[in-house]
Image 1 (spheres, rainbow, N blue to C red):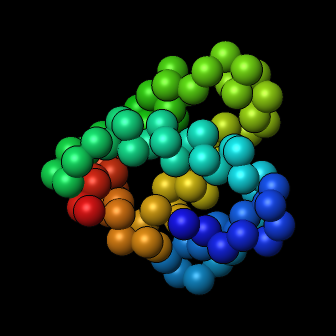
Image 2 (cartoon, rainbow, N blue to C red):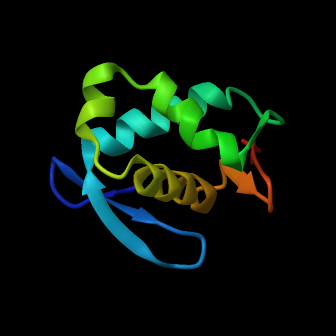
Length: 97
């Protein structure tokens, strides 16, 4: 999990050491959606389709509230990569843990 900055803000990390902060409920909503899309090790999804699938998995309130969903999905995915849960190549994201 990302480092808690406050009870409402978390810090996400990328595999190459970059960080960003986002609201915890954004992070948790997107993380749950990503892990539902990739439920077990070995399951993969096309990177191109991942944003559409996350969008469809979110409840309507969350979809309407999150600005720049693509940016948030990318950072949550990077954080999951830095935790060793996901792996990405040029076209696919694969769950490894």
